[in-house]
Length: 314
Ligand SMILES: Nc1ncnc2c1ncn2[C@@H]1O[C@H](COP(=O)(O)OP(=O)(O)O)[C@@H](O)[C@H]1O
Ligand SMILES: [Mg+2]
Image (tube, rainbow, N blue to C red):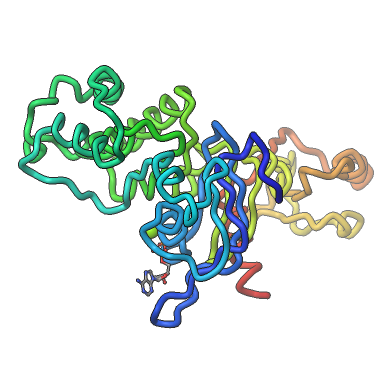
């Protein structure tokens, strides 16, 4: 796909075979849009960190090209790398450094001129300003995570990678991280986060890419994904229990609950003709009365499990 002004990261034909012979990425093509939050969702070992590591120049690709805002990560490495901030999966910080020294040094590594006002804003936005003179070892776990973000932002990147930002983090910290990521996006930074938590992708992302065994098996707007692949269920609470689904209704694939009091109809939410109108008429004709009904849409979790299962069956 061609590079457009709306694309900040363009990955084409990217593969990685490690020295062990293990094929961690297979022909990955991916375009990231400027200003979006993109979640790369996949189980452990799928290749998420490998992908990020290649884009950040930590791991060499076996084949393929990566462009960051038009800059090739090999031919034009410095320009490409200066546009990227990386919050790595593993927490690594120098325990005895102060917060301020850490972010100042990190900025310097990218050859950026000093800009105390910018670094102050970053630390304030991350609620770390009053800790600026503290040694890192005195910070709480949540503060250390925020410091890694501050460090990654120190050189004013346009594209921020968060590799499993909430793995092993408690619920409160998770919520805090999600708010922070949204706030960052609102400042114009494009965000790519990797996660193996489906709810995180569902909560955060504008678009979701699913990666499994080194292959991107789907990329879709989150809302579209839910609409397209989501099945809906209509559940009817019956006025009288049934012993079995009446033969006249056999064509609808209805499921009768063990108690005989609920009938469930599963349909494709994307189709124009859900078949609900006919079903209700058929119920009426068969003399089946109901006292209430509800519909449920399947979650991304169902979708994800189905996708990965379909792949494995194939
Ligand atoms: N340096 C390496 N040498 C050989 N295999 C590796 C190396 N790094 C990662 N792998 C393998 O590549 C696969 C993808 O790893 P990774 O990219 O870390 O996945 P994820 O971040 O999605 O959990 C895993 O099976 C992992 O064991
Ligand atoms: Mg990883």
